[in-house]
Length: 210
Ligand code: B12
Image (tube, rainbow, N blue to C red):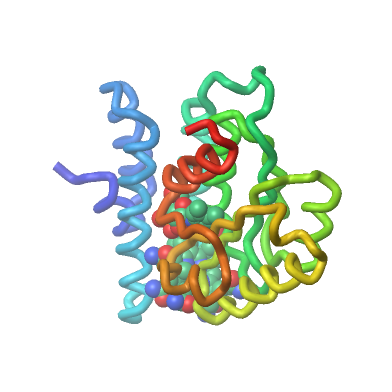
């Protein structure tokens, strides 16, 4: 039987939706379903690299992923929304980068865990991050980076935070497609999260809740 990741990789929207529905009915957790979809996105990325898929296919994949995320959102949110917030997180995709699916999932899961998330959207200039930290008093910053060409933006954001005298007040995490722990080191961040779960784990550690 075809898997969600396979159907996603083939951009078979109807099949993906049918399989998601089936998995939900079987009681498979939403986080597991998302992981499957993300595996499919990796396949799509590979096909793009090989020249089999083009930007239009990336866009279509993005739309399918957005629909699925919206459908799973209530299940990812958890039940903690009414409780006191655990802490504030400024989250955004860095300047020059418009990939938002990964960031949105991180935001969703942070909110679901009980954090207040100040979402800066995409293409976020370093000054925007600095201003948001000042305005909100957030103690955690999350940067999403999907293009190797914008690593400099992540470095510039960390530098701007330093220049504003806020570096020792915030813990900075970074994640996204091509990011590794080496990128974390070179950009001056405190933590690299391979996925949303790792990001939430780190945020919980920062606020002393884990
Ligand atoms: C969909 C997609 C697009 C869509 C984005 C839609 C959207 N609304 O986001 C569109 C069509 C817009 C797009 C555009 C481009 N894209 Co694109 N895109 C992708 C693709 C296929 C999937 C990315 C994605 O959303 N995955 C789904 C997410 C949910 O999965 P995930 O990464 O596992 O997410 C987790 C982690 O990353 C982590 N995470 C993410 N952020 C953060 C932050 C923190 C703090 C933490 C802790 C964790 C964390 O948590 C997430 C949830 O668990 C990737 C291929 C890939 N394998 O990544 C290429 C890819 C990222 N794109 C690529 C390219 C080249 C481009 C373009 C330059 C193409 C072009 N020529 O125009 C443009 C760039 C435009 C720009 N200025 O940003 C390349 C980048 C190559 C590189 N190394 O630099 C990739 C890798 C494809 C490839 N293999 O060549 N793209």
